[in-house]
Length: 151
Image (cartoon, rainbow, N blue to C red; front, side, top):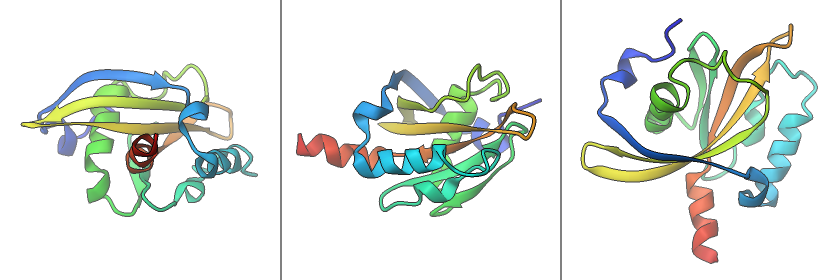
């Protein structure tokens, strides 16, 4: 199964470094409350994106089949984040995830002549049979950059 897609594979992304961070140390109380709410949702097969619809946060859901949707605030604002997920973090798909644990990644990348980084929270959700059904991806870059600037 192909996880990449034609919209993103044609973009000249270059990833320089990916670092996994401890989300409990990087997220503020509001985000940690959202994560706890997501972890405690009644239906564990639900993507639960509603828990992460906060100010200065964007995101989307992508299934193990590579279908994406439930973008907030919209698809265009998530283009880079989705490309980083599809082309670099999970280019072979998400079926190979060894656990349903939440991950926070800092991805340093460039597109053409622009260099930047994104903080992506990846929350895998399970199917009815307990396999990986998809991931809810939350971009925390604006919130975490505000936090860093206060330190």
